[in-house]
Length: 259
Ligand code: BJW
Ligand code: ZN
Image 1 (cartoon, rainbow, N blue to C red):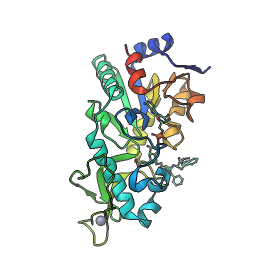
Image 2 (image 1 turned 180 degrees about the vertical axis):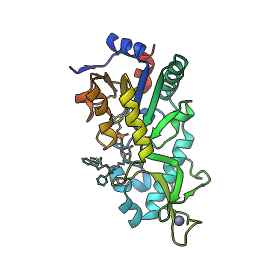
Image 3 (image 1 turned 90 degrees about the horizontal axis):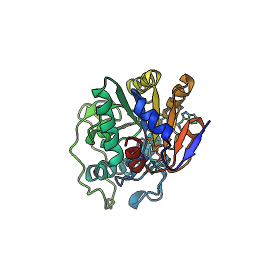
Image 4 (image 1 turned 90 degrees about the vertical axis):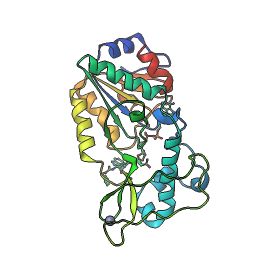
């Protein structure tokens, strides 16, 4: 029976207090209060005519590598310019608390930012890769790049071509993220599934719950009958399978959950 509330019910406080093995699945919403736009928000500048679904695909990169490359470099500069928020910090503290009690908290994120890590959390898996990592679009060789020179706030005026690969003749670099139609990194996905199979609580934070296969992970918890809690200001594709849906921002709800 789903319970939808704006405040944190006593039952949830008790579940959180008693849980020893916790999986948190996070999405773009947990970084929203840091100033990172979610995917459903309107794009700015060079990209205002495009949705994320039109930019985060292999076809978009093939058709206009400079447009897509510059979008990622600009997003990376934005991530570099912002700070983790109370939601990220709270999860890091909860993780540390459980480790000290011989339990664990596994952070599984769809986010390509590093704000969980910068808040002090260890991330079990980045299901959709990382903005800061790059590889050759042709030969796959990983490549290191300096931080982008954009300021994170002003959209760059003109698109910039992706750099060439140093390991093969014609390859260009791409961000090491997972685009629509691509496979998720198996180690991250498998580790996430294994953690949910061993967990006694799943908390889903700040995701619209519609992008597969990440959105199917909480169903492994449903099969096992463990409690599922969602934190999100809006209804999502996963709300109906939850036991508790707390309608609020993660930076406000998470601290209350753990108080
Ligand atoms: C707050 C808040 C606050 C706001 N506090 N909350 C089955 C059916 C139909 C389609 C498919 C299917 N299986 C696979 C597909 C295709 C596709 C898919 O799922 N499409 C859907 C759109 C239907 N999936 C794939 O292609 C995946 N690959 C795959 O399946 O491979 C096998 C295969 C191959 C070929 C054919 C078929 C299968 C890959 C998916 C890769 C997703 N990549 C992206 C881009 C990453 C790089 C980048 O960052 O640019 O990942 S897309 C984008 O969506 C990004 C995100 O990680 C992901 C999820 O978004 P998220 O995090 O949920 O964000 P939003 O913006 O959607 O929601 C924000 C939420 O926050 C909202 O709910 C707000 O309310 C909330 N919020 N403020 C708390 N303060
Ligand atoms: Zn190459």
